[in-house]
Length: 362
Ligand SMILES: Cc1ncc(COP(=O)(O)O)c(C=O)c1O
Image 1 (tube, helix red, strand yellow):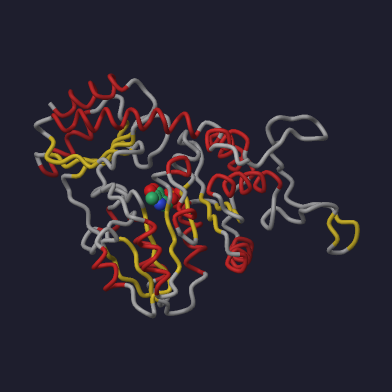
Image 2 (tube, helix red, strand yellow):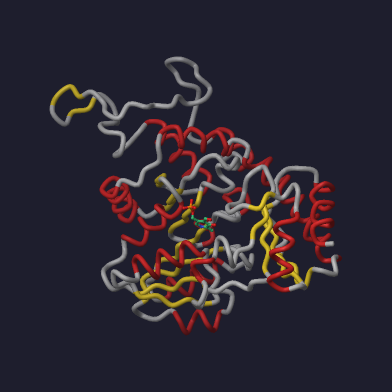
């Protein structure tokens, strides 16, 4: 019987060490491993870029949580994304969300785009627009749900059907939902990526990324690229991520409870023109009725919500996407409204968080 996700986040990837009884994995710092003959390693490891025991525990844990056969950890979410994009043939065509994370857009447009990758930015929530954009030469559909920063949700199963209809792969960035709330592979996605910097780590103290998938041949290519390109996380980073993952369920429960309360409050505030909350998760965005000056002003007046990039940690954060996380998409199809404010709700008291927003918006 498969354990429930609340149990798996605590146990995935590790059993007490038979040799020492250690209930958490050690941080294996060794960069190289002894061999009994040329190319005959003592155990499973040769060189720490190719494979590391602490990283292997993290990769097994992440694969378990997403219901994947294969897991790969990277030095950042963008390194994970880069690896997936490198599997595409030269000159391939992909579809990305019209409201993709700014760094994803920049990576697609200005790194892979300059090397020949072609892309269309589409509203994946609009079935007709998606059908028009996905054609016989589309190799990949890239999806975020909920999206960053407008928190739109996408019907992953429906997008998978359209993508698979033309033989394209569906990649889902599951950073905002986390495997606690959504497991895209079970909905038909082919590849899941994460910025584990966010909810998986959960404490704003480690940058990381992950790729999870089932297909053996594609996994072999991802594993090859992980080693060949070398954007791997340090053992200590892997250990921090494992430590964070153990509390994912309780953190997300509390963050979600706080986000629901904050979204409910914002609906009643006259300085808020529109609240964006998908009904689950810990992120809330809103349009300030006072336009960009109002949004910027609110961002500088909170006491508990720290004005900072990133999200998903125990402390609440506020940010202005147009000037911060999404500044790189200014003037493109993915430009963000200047009156938009994005909140990442932490695990503090919801009453304190609401009082903080009330005084900042007043
Ligand atoms: C949805 C999403 N995907 C990917 C990334 C990139 O991850 P990283 O910052 O770990 O490289 C981010 C970062 O904010 C993000 O919000």
